[in-house]
Image (cartoon, rainbow, N blue to C red):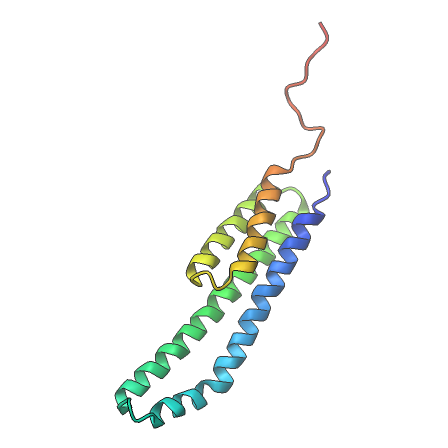
Length: 141
């Protein structure tokens, strides 16, 4: 049995970053969405329809980021649970890597730090194997 401390720590930090960013962006969009929309509506350069389109666009982008970060955090927790069992280290590594790539691409590289943490944890989970599992043992002649 191999210790997976490095993968667990990197995965936990990635989950915390994703969860915190989802919570903080959600609170920010929820709290300041009406104020920003009102400021845009009061801007003389925008008509009422344009102001509504712009404010709903930025609100939509914020909620999109919240959803992507929340899903990445949930997938990180799933990978951590599989890794903790120590039987699914390869599956856990694949989940980490897929989550890293998708969260980085879907957030247009805003979530780079958690993606890098997930990527390193995934690579470690896949490549690190127990020492005593070499099947190519040389038998005595």
